[in-house]
Image (cartoon, rainbow, N blue to C red; front, side, top):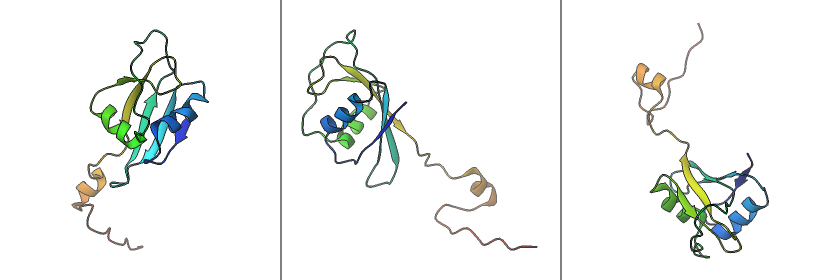
Length: 119
């Protein structure tokens, strides 16, 4: 599956233009600017069997689109130039839970790891 790397402020229509060149389902990857979290949007191929929905706003960024898709499990969408609609699904890759090994050692992420000494 191809991965299209984007900047969060890029327009959805520009990013989907790159997705369309793949002729396959794709992942759009970008970094959330405030948290540095790696985010993905799974994008299906446009499909004639899906209801044709209105096109997305031409000024919508990929980050704004992620936020709307992330509020539901999946979303049918269409961008200008697409005859058929596609499905988008937001995927978060970062687990904000502490590392289990740190928990077992009693460390919190905000604390620096102690230097191990060689025996």
